[in-house]
Amino acid sequence: MGSLQRQTSPESDNDPRYATVTDERKRKRMISNRESARRSRMRKQKQLGDLINEVTLLKNDNAKITEQVDEASKKYIEMESKNNVLRAQALELTDRLRSLNSVLEMVEEISGQALDIPEIPESMQNPWQMPCPMQPIRASADMFDC
Image (cartoon, rainbow, N blue to C red; front, side, top):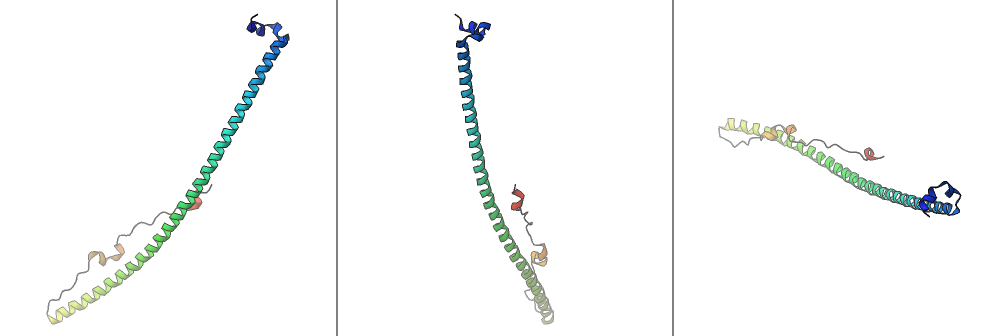
């Protein structure tokens, strides 16, 4: 009795043993498919949880970086303000030095004596041309909100 021949023969359709074997295979396949689907759902759920955790971490990192950028920008603005004050003071002192040098030149002409008149450094003659860094490009936190 070849079971393969019996299963494929037309008479096997009426054979209760064949129906039992077929039903058992279908039941096992169905159980296997259900278990596979359950594992797939669990994997997807874990992946979703991992992605949600990663998003949370990235948002926290982004908030910290935004705070650091804001703090650096505040310090830059503060330094730029101090630099502007120093440039104005340098300009004022340069003007005073020019005035004093003019007075010394007059005294030198009148007295006939050679005086040590300091020269104004080239960088001080044009204080508006002092090296000044470019303004930073500020990234706002709004750009990264989804």
